[in-house]
Length: 389
Image 1 (tube, rainbow, N blue to C red):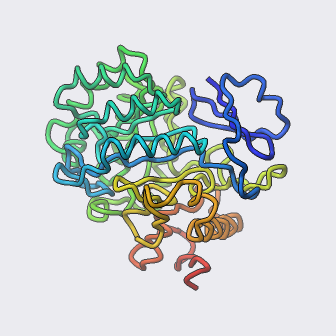
Image 2: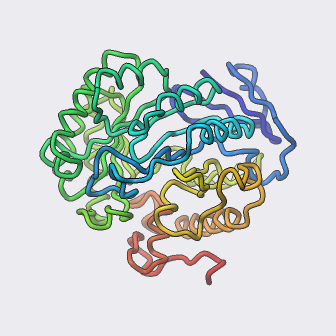
């Protein structure tokens, strides 16, 4: 399905099969869309989109596992999150705002007793809905059946190595539970994908992980470990190791033509582009320009790691603050957008850009501000945002 959302310069055409979108300025693709989302209110600004395209919704901090590298530091004892009724109300506000895609994350979303009701309600509001899960369930048959019945556009599972290393990070038996889930979902029409957090444990297992992924999914993504939460303590890889693992992924791709293999060292199509010549809007970064994050306690953030790094980037809290007000009027969000523009310009002039490096990374830049880490392989000091210089 293709969804067209009206913007003052034309619109956004969203493809639900790929969870991607493109900018439309001539209106031609509007005719081919299966669904049309008109302006529900007059936009207050013309230098940003009328609303986020997607929202990362941290449904709960609670998780049935206690993974050694969890950036949220989730566990079975963590907080559950907002009430069902408040989440329903927030979903309705998101619908009124014109948001297209909701990506439910956690913690482990299915650790909530009402997870199915929440996702089912989101689908009834015509959101494009995706789910991130660890694939470990008390009743695998029931949960897989529920997931399949929702008609989700995408479900992402985490696999962090072969059995020994995956279980070391996530708990004994978690690997077999995940494989059981994948085997059952393969018999359904669910669009499943895998994500692997790269660590010193699994760098030598990449080819085997890809081989395994090819049996169950059409997409696997390899990402570097965020040194956040418990991730600070567990086997982060170096910049060079990250780059070399990307080269291996590129080599493997030709052997698995039916499997799309992504890697966080790769520059994706359209990534870090200069502002669109017709719209005037900066699409160089998704965070803050096309997406927002909602934490389990109802607070709003520019991206889905900031809430676990610094309180500075907290934009407001539901229901005291509304999405529209935050999107158009938050001074902190405006400053964040300015900062990302400065980071972009720094990367454009760097010899490593599009060579060993795919460009700036927000959470690592924020970590650099604390003086504890520095992700950039060239600059020894972080680029300070203008409001703290």
